[in-house]
Length: 260
Figure (tube, rainbow, N blue to C red):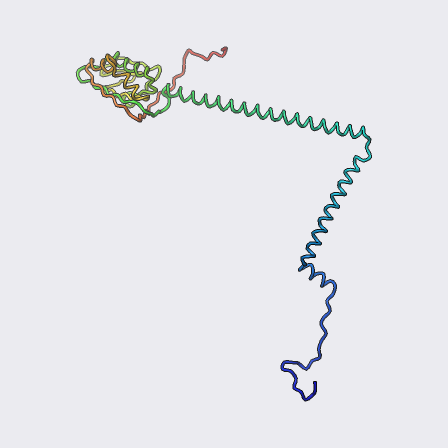
């Protein structure tokens, strides 16, 4: 370029500098940071070859463990392994039998426990020790022209029991039990030492239609009560609540026979 020619715009009056040289370490780092597809493939092949070499070495070492043994030694080792496997199988069978036995015993205990609990609930209901609810009937006996006889009332209770009455309550207060006793009294009837005064209201739990039928047949309890001069009203109900309970009584003479 001649001195009288104008210099290009933006060019400094400085000499040109050579480009910096790239070291081998820098080129290696750059390659690791951004590997090419061929480098990835080669790396994967090297990893597979290395893994195969390790497996081969391990197998060779395992083979060398038995390589120097005699045939009799190998037979003894095989026999020992067979015996160990057989003992393990027998132990597994024993544990499985124990498991099945425990499961069977547990099932039997659970069934016995459920039966016992159900039996206790049934006995508590029969003994009148717990409140109960269910379908049944309500009987109302009013003395209009005469006094209700004790025999008529006893016949009514007996017919209800025969018709599978499960619970009975008199005048919303007194629960009838298996050993309940009736007696005559001034102004009414005595139940277990408690005076019952008319009108007598008896609530009964059981099948409503069956219980009603046990009272309404010819010459049955209702006819007898009407002969006494009483009027009787029977209602079949889907739900009867009996909340009164009896105090549990302890037997004085009876004891459990442990010899049977």
